[in-house]
Length: 76
Image 1: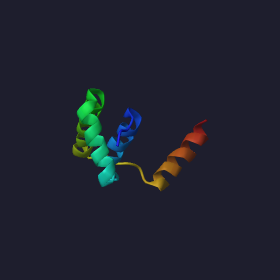
Image 2: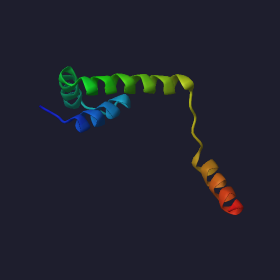
Image 3: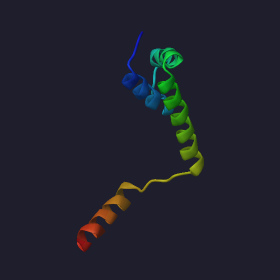
């Protein structure tokens, strides 16, 4: 059941997008009970995700990205 800090951070990131399974979450919870560094990372990661959600960030569509890319290539 023991996982590395690298695995814990990966599971933490997956959990922010509801992609982590039950066993992964259980392993993460056990790990952060023992590792204060990963506990802090998990807390900060949750806060960052919450801030991004509240900010209402939007991304460009694929077509807008292509238009910007072509425009940039023209100017180079």
